[in-house]
Image (cartoon, rainbow, N blue to C red; front, side):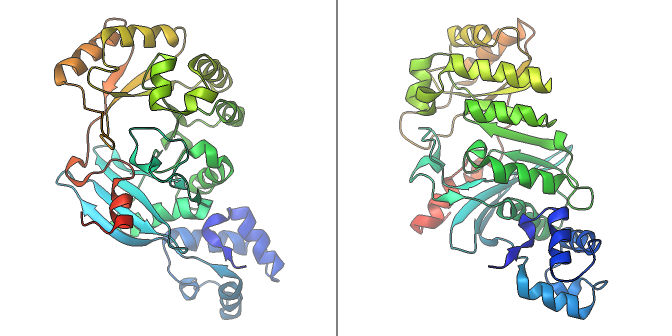
Length: 343
């Protein structure tokens, strides 16, 4: 089976070079060419023709294909990428004043079953390889002719359910001879897989961990997020405390406000009580009405909810809603492609 170069670290490419009779320093040359965006081995002009031919025999450097692309009036770009086996995944590029951010998928589909998420419809097909994750960045940069400097792992899938490949992806993307995205420019979002959160903490990576909470009450959270049955809030908070002790990093709490369900002052107070003594930021997000029964909170309710935190000097902000005109919420474009619907 051919080696996917995008799934290999620089060291692994060096070992591959040695295995086919070349010096190990060739690995760095190949790695550098790869992340300059070359599309063929023939473009790696400081390698001998014979070596390039060998590489072509044992390696691939295939990127995801753009199946569908949507561009918002605010500059947000959403992609449906088709992978080599026909699977469809999504990525979103968002333009901010501080640079370009990409929201990446880590799985084809998702098994977590969160009720307000379109990705949950149909469940998970498979994990993505490290190369398929980094390929989303490379394909978007090539299409937009821009540099992407920030990554949020908030697309399709649960990153910690594909932890090995996600960690490898971040290692590759962080390499100074490659894309060179600093760890502090990564945000990893999880629905709360406690054992994996603690394993991640042991790595002591200076990334931002973002945790989907959505309710401070177990019964209510369990209705929205089946994962709460295995990892209830008390267990989640205990794991997050251990993560914070290990890393010293502030936690980002994701909270989708749903009208007349989880947007009361009592919810805000309970959330503050739940995370008392911890360093955290509350990131309030507009709910994605992927299924019936979820309606965005009114502007007045959002303001009141945020004010509860402001009065206690706890940082809480409303996420800027980008790409609303192109259904940029996760899973929607993929569903359109799979069902043959037009955007």
